[in-house]
Image (cartoon, rainbow, N blue to C red; front, side, top):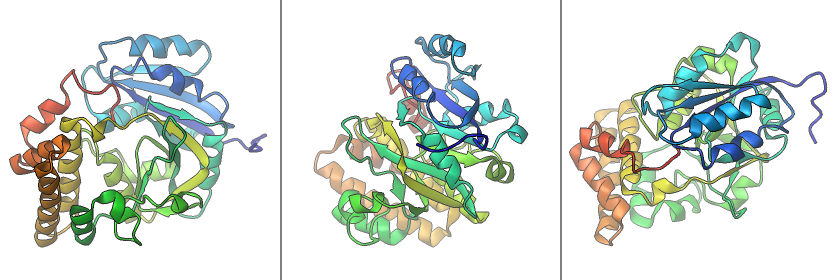
Length: 320
């Protein structure tokens, strides 16, 4: 148990919801025993058509919940930015960004807040588990052309287990020890308010996926580290981007968009080609998600087709 008597940090939580009433109660309940001064829980709702808003409002009797309705399906980054606008960062040590399909283990926030005291640490992330208790790989290396080629040839999971070949770290042994990461899944991450003031808002041009990558890479540009703590644990239901073709397409398209934005034209074209080749190989093998990814890449990263399909009401209840 983490000793937080008299020194417990002041933390606010931001939850982004979109038709999330089935999973939101578990997320809210998991915030209770976390060893911090929980100053605010802002539920930023992206025009849900279910009872997400009612669920959040009902929790206000036992949590400091504030519901913020964006009025549209604004995307993950836009909802985070709207929620941060209603917080007084001067009274907070950190802000925890959390998906509604996450459940925190006790003291997770306190453990992550302690990590933020490390020199240069601006973002702290927990170990993510699947519902069955198995590891959910969540920490990454920097995206590079060579890694894109390796993942195209042998697949991301295999590449992640061979040295530093893959971007996604899949070796379970790497998750047993704390350490730096280049970026991590945005479903659960604690941000220092010092970092937030310096970096400014999240990039809303990424409607869904890669916004956390961009934010972590931008943090590194400013001299901050992402720190992974295996003792801090969150269960993340998630996973729809692996089976939903439209979401899978947007994941790949945004990954290429971000890489191109941060590198020269030659490297950007090479990254695009490697990514397209890998998805094309898997599409020919019959993978529906890869067929959608190829279509998205060919149509272009700013295709209205891609965005409109992703915001369809038939898609997933969580934002990322």
